[in-house]
Length: 486
Ligand code: RAM
Image (tube, rainbow, N blue to C red; front, side, top):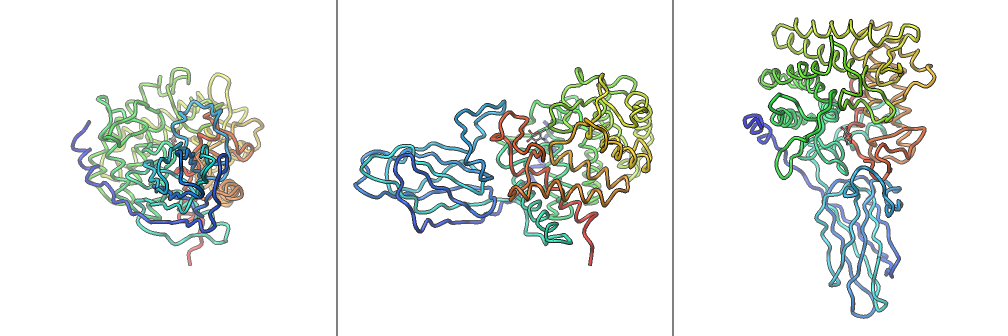
C-alpha cells in the first residue's frame, strides 16, 4: 500500500448529506399471518430505513416474525427468491427476516439499502393480535453536492437526463460506487464513466481524485492496478485484475487532468498509469494480445458469448494513445507511447481485420461483435470515414454479438459520435435509455438487453442492480454533444 497516495485519498473523503423521508401509513390495515403491505417512497433512494409497528387486539402474546424486502423496482419485491440460483451471493438480496419481541416498537434496520419500494410481510403472528405498520422513514444519503438543472431539447430527453442524474447521484457515496445495491464499491471501468458525467454535472472533482488515489494506493508490488477497491473496514484492493480496466486508468487520469488542470496529481500518478502499458504487454506477443484462453479477464461487456481478444487489443491502443496525449499535455515526450500505439495498430490490422467482412473479428473463429468493432473505432485505427463505414457494416452484419450493458452502449454511442454519425448516436441513446424509461426506470440499470429485459449474466435477475452508475452517461452526452445551447 502506498501510504502517501492513501493519505491523499483519505484527505478527500466526502461529507455525506442526509435527507429524511417519512411515509405515514394513515389507513393502516391490521395484518394477520401471511398478509403483507407494499410501500412506495415515490423515487429511488439510498439510505437507512426505520419502521414503526404497533398491534391491535389482545396484548401480544408471541413475537411477530416479519420479512422486509426492499426493491429498486416493483419487480424486485414481487420476485420469489426462495429458489434463488446465481453465482453472485444471495447475501446481496435486500431482504431481512426479523423478530419483533415487544410491540409497539421502531425497527431501525442497520443495513443501507437502495430502494424505491419496501414490502413488509407477516410470516408469523399469534391469533390473538394483528400487526399494524404505522410509518416508515428513510434517511437518504449521498455525496452529490446539489441538484443540477436538467438538459434536453424535449421532455423525453429531459426525462432521460433526470434519471441519469439520479443514477449518478445515488452512486456518489464515500466513493463513486458502481451500484448502491450491489457491489457498492469502486470499480475502475465504472469510475471512468461516472467521472465523465460528473465533470459536466455535479463537478465533485475531488471525489474523482480520491478514487484515482485509492486505485493508485492499492496497486500491487508490480504496479498492477486492481479492477476494484474496497473501502471497508479499511482500504484494500480486490484480487481481481482486468486487462481493460487497468488500462482505463490512463484515460481516466487524462480526463481528470483536462477537467481540473490538477497538474500535480497528473504528474504524480503518470508513472503508475504508464506502467499499465508495460503490464498489458506481458499479455501480448509482438504487440498482439494473446488468445482469450490465456488472456485472463478482460471485461468489455457482460455478454457472456463475447470473445475478448481483439477488443483487448483495441483498448490497449486506445490507452497508449491517451497516454501519449497526456504526456504531450504535460510537456513530456510522447514518442514512446506513440510508438507502442503504432506497433499495436499495425499488428491489429494484420491480426484482426477481416477484409472480406470489412470488420474486425476476434478469436480463432473470427467472431464479429459490437464491442470489438466499437473499441477499434474509439482507438482510431482506421480513418474517421472508414470508421463510419465500418459501423454501418457492423449494423447490418447478421449475428454480430450485441452489447447488453449501458456500459458498452456508452462506448457505442461515443464511437458513432467520433465517426461523425452524431444524429444516429443520439437516436441510439434515446432508444436504448428510453426503453428503460418505458419499463419504469427511476434510475438506469446495470444490464439491459431490450430483446431480453429479464436477462442476467449472474443467472438470476434478482442479482442485477437497477441503479448502476455506468448507465449515467446520457447526462454527459446531452451536455457535451446533443443539447442545444440557448
Ligand atoms: C459488475 C460490477 C461492476 C463492473 C463489473 C465488471 O459486476 O457491478 O459494475 O465493473 O461487473
